[in-house]
Picture 1 (cartoon, rainbow, N blue to C red):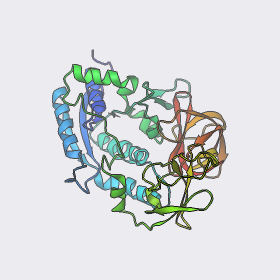
Picture 2 (picture 1 turned 180 degrees about the horizontal axis):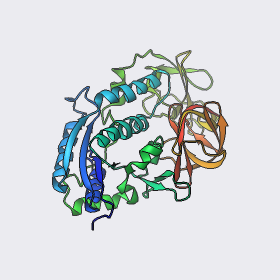
Picture 3 (picture 1 turned 30 degrees about the vertical axis):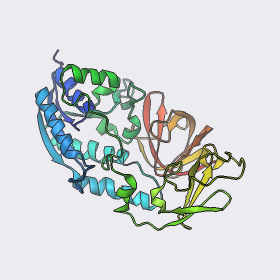
Length: 372
């Protein structure tokens, strides 16, 4: 059936099944659909881990089946300036950034949106599991969680503003992933069974430490436990994140008897990074007090509505895939503070704290500090 408001929509085709079904659904609704494949990384195109060439072939095959044009656009220079440089700065400062959040704000909904508007688009669309709704009372555009709770990606999109939300469509946000796969198979899309991509947007499946090693200087230093005993040597603080359990190289070291937070056979976790002393602090046991926080402060804030919500009771995520946690929003210099009645695990500076009011994603900020 043809939509009464037929529009020119430019779809970001990644080569994956979600964006392919997005393009199909929009064409089926009667829109004039154009596909764009974004190339965001080109440092090692010949690497075994770089899949952008395969992805473009898949995206072109999808465009052919659906019957739409596709354009290959290179945003690698923008990506390096706006996303990757910030990513490295954060790692060198001892924090753990989320480049997917930055990529959405700076590339997919800025560089890509600008390019699409130059092509005469009225809207852009991506295969994200989220939704946009215009509030009938305020007239503001709201970012909503995707209907499939296991796939919701609103966390990664929380930096989108009113101008961006007004121009964006998320058709698969209304569907569950199983339905998206079913549609893809039903219409014979060549990538119907392609597995979902994992890993950081530009690093892909390659070993993370090996990748970071090429860009960040690293000085080894001591690994100490919560009582100051040396357990081993770290390879550089940038390579570790709070809550990390694998790859510490101290698996054989055990506490004598049950200590705070864990017993003799409890696993070790990264709990603190002391940049001044170049020291990694680890603790034993998932629920060690050093890993638990009731309070955080976030800066570099972005609110979808253009202004901060009123202080009060909300829910928040301090990492992707986390359950919403009840919290109280408070004002703080250059940002906001959150207080949680229930302790949150491994709250990590550099990650995003994202605020929700029910199914509405309000926005968020970058975690600076976490406290007990």
